[in-house]
Image (tube, rainbow, N blue to C red; front, side, top):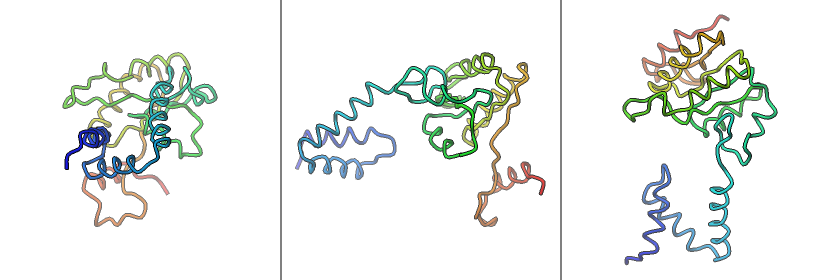
Length: 195
């Protein structure tokens, strides 16, 4: 049985990241089982979010205001740099971080044709200068694009005398060493701490 409307709905859900055909199909059937009022509310919430949410002019994170609350209330003495807005959510779990975030919207990645000019590095340099930032914490993903971006930014910020740090990486808590890969073990050895 082919229903054009159902096929279009499944295709719409499949356009979301990480949603395969089966999941999209479940979502579509879920919508069909909702009341008409609930479907309208669901659709309107998507439209409202798209219309009201944009990027903060300072940090580049999602916001409903020109400048987000984090940028207004926290000191830019310390800036934590992340790749994507979703990374801010993960980093906000840290209770002892009192600085601000800076979202690059990607990392330097020649394979994806992303150069330093394609991400928000110029804006980061401008913030560091404007706020006389003392430390920039690089919290990009621990992969080749993330490391490349972190080292590029560290070199770029050297003339400003700002301290640039990188999140520690290595063996996760509760991991058996026998299951850790060579790269992770090497990183853990390089970044070992005094006891």
